[in-house]
Amino acid sequence: MTARFLTLSDVAELLNIAPAQVYTLVRTGELPAIKIGARGQWRVEDKALEIYIQQLYSSTAKFVAQNPR
Image (cartoon, rainbow, N blue to C red; front, side, top):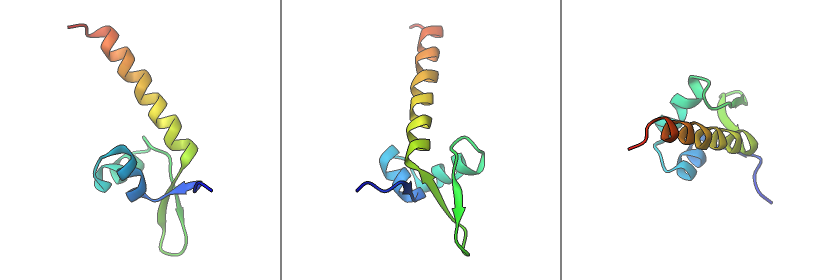
């Protein structure tokens, strides 16, 4: 069974970026996340991550179309 919610470290590993970069994406609202528990640990839903990735593909495609070599 695949986990529905991912830690920021899990997201960082999947995107091959630093955990601090994921934290920044979450804190700016670019990547939706929730805080869980008394210690307020961040979690990103797997579906939210997939939507974020698709948005990146879309914005990259627009950038490439607008900025040909």
